[in-house]
Image (cartoon, rainbow, N blue to C red):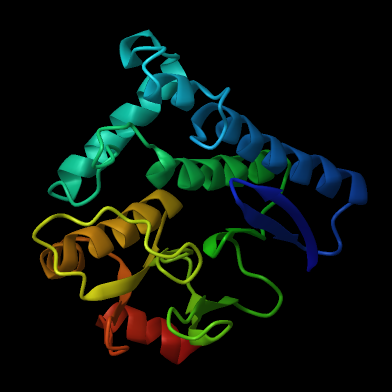
Length: 251
């Protein structure tokens, strides 16, 4: 596999594609992926003073007067808020609209579409540990490690992604520290959640929702959705459903 990396959204993005693909095709495909991340960072980043999101946050632009892209992203986030019983939300505790909880997954989703449009059938895109894969590599499976939240540089578990659970996302303190807005009634007993799902948006949103919503949201997700889940408690103990155990066994 050839590996191509670039920085975006405050993290490192890596694209893996088979070595036998034409070099020009690969370069064009990677450029398309980088573009998908860049345009979203330019519009949605609250770290960029000139972004549309920052203008809304400062009160210079009403959401109703924002771009269709912004309003569509907000609508999608509201759908996920309702689906998680409010555990996931696009609104910060201070009231500022922050769509970072869905935009990285949206960029990964668009990256996958760009790679398929370029003729890619087997590839992976990893953005700060959130992983979208497609097809079956020569090794037989996409195998990835999950960062340990309590041991710098440590690996908590290794999983083998399957076609039905081809995307993985982790939310917690391993990469960015405490940054998730927990619901007031959540006791903070979960410090990291990893979700494997068929699509990256589901994986990313549900991982965040489990941290924010705690045990109640974990029960909702594991009883309703076709996902594999691993949760790390504050004392370092683990909770994983049978679907996750199957992925570990296959690794």
